[in-house]
Length: 421
Ligand SMILES: C[S@@+](CC[C@H](N)C(=O)[O-])C[C@H]1O[C@@H](n2cnc3c(N)ncnc32)[C@H](O)[C@@H]1O
Ligand code: SF4
Image (cartoon, rainbow, N blue to C red; front, side, top):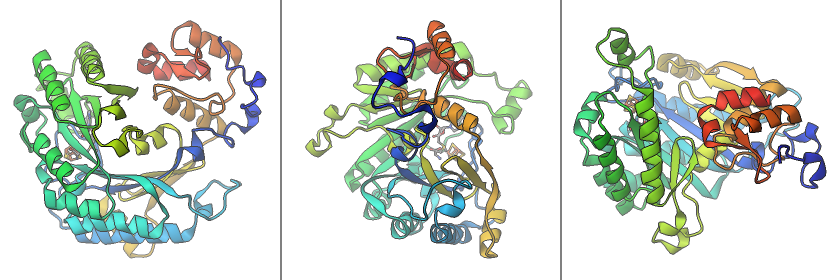
């Protein structure tokens, strides 16, 4: 089968309605809220995220500004944020996921961090089973912090472990040793956090095969529910970028990174993790002891919302939001963001509306990142010849009736989308 055979399937709407009648994508994917906390005690040399130390003392004003931003945006209603002509009313959908990311959210005083989550729950309708994640640096964790977060409704913690090899942690300029993430997971569990993710980075210069094998062994032993593993990326504007340009640090070896990826897939797969997205593995629910969790997936609902082209609000510096094909983002500078809000002005730096072709490309690119790909209703109308071409060169498959990337297509997503569109 080389076509999605949409015309012959009763569950597939006419091509022109693929954006409006989603099965899993778009509005059907849920509705999320992202909160960005941009402070870090130390800026790791590889990191390109919107983060700063807080030597200038902005933290209190920043937290107050995010509260105001949430309240004003919600009060303004959805219609003003949607694209002109979109058939949307002012009501906000029920929130299915909240993600507090950074930076280091856990650098905030616990009451301030919990207060941001409580503000979202107070302003919007938070689903009873919403996934509420907070990113946590291991050296900032404590039982008291996690207990406060649980009381605020936090259900999930995403911990940056990166590696369990001391010399790799040193190269990455991490502020914790290899034991700390494991202790922090135990503290999170003891406080009642239901789900834990560990972030890993592989292919750091100086990392050996045995370092990666040991890291994966420790990850499996740590009892995490989810693993995000990223190949080290060198960004030009970071200290690592400067060091590479100066010849003081080698570029990560892409072949080595590809091998590390394969090893991660083998080890995590053998330990019962489902490789459900290019960089993400979720523990199979059956492996968890708690009977009430047996039917739940440990996939990240918030990230699935992004990959399924859903709608989400976003608050804080440099945070990107999306409603029905319109995207906007806030100033990336803390002083600009805070002073705009304090002056009663908008903190939005810019916005863009995606054309139908851009929306189609984006939905394909994001949807193909997930293992099971796109339901035919969610895939934009495709030229049968283009689809046959992409299938023929082994980038995608429709063999189970869905549009899926093959393993090769996962690594060549740009090429797969280019051929399909
Ligand atoms: C937004 S960061 C925040 C995580 C948290 N502050 C920490 O460091 O533990 C999320 C994750 O992105 C990954 N990451 C950041 N920069 C990266 C880079 N240059 N290459 C690969 N992964 C990176 C790391 O795994 C990190 O844990
Ligand atoms: S990796 Fe985490 S701790 Fe390091 S600078 Fe980036 S956000 Fe901060």
